[in-house]
Amino acid sequence: MKQLLAAIVIILLIPSAGYAFPMVSAGKQHLQFGFESIDGDWRVEFGYGRFFTDELLLGMLFTYERKPARATAVSGVMEYHFNLGTMTYPYLSAIVIYEDHPYNDYFRYGPAAGINHFLTPYLSLDLKARYLYSSSSRRDEDLEFIGSLRVFF
Image 1 (spheres, rainbow, N blue to C red):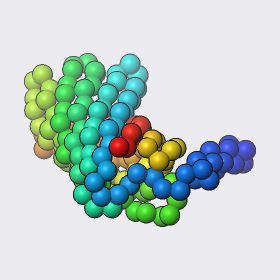
Image 2: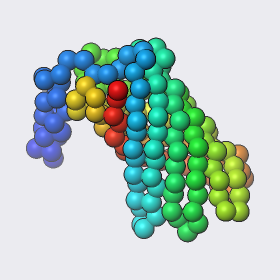
Image 3: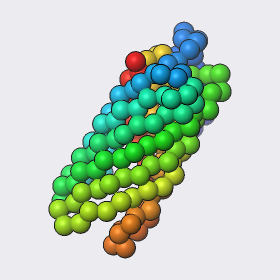
């Protein structure tokens, strides 16, 4: 276990030695790609966002998921990033999702927290957890863990 933790720390610290300034500042934009697969069900997310201040990002996500029924979704996202002076930026987020299912359409909304770790000034790994409430009584609250890649420009 100690070896695994040491390897993770080394992997996270190596990029910070070579690059001092990730692309997190007002006016910067990003494209995001995420994928999740569980028990044969899968989901693909594509996103776009723009920093309006050095900390505040507003964006949209487009999602397609293949479960027993196909579904698409459009999301609005607001993220507040915390600059720790490293290549890792934790953030808090709020999300509103409109989901279109074959037999039912509804909204889901809720908070999220994540870590955006930069591998280079233009490429980052994003890991987040979000807890979503549903406007439909048929779906309960849901805790989701999502990983994605972000490309900044």
